[in-house]
Image (cartoon, rainbow, N blue to C red; front, side):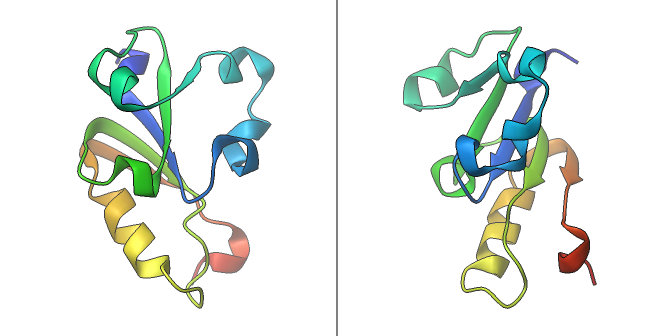
Length: 100
């Protein structure tokens, strides 16, 4: 699959997300998506957006993280919106403490 088919979604910005911990090689291949970059994505780059900014949009593959924990306000909304952006495949990353 081309990297442009993959979108990283998080409840927080890139700098505060788990995706910031990726090796430098992969971080350099991430485009933070805005209106222009959503329309004209580079085929060689993975997209990143916050869940709120990606609401109403779709991607073939979504890697979702940083939705919060089940006791936090907005948790279910972030989880629902993030999960329903995927058209083909969804990967969900949860901290061990948030599984259950």
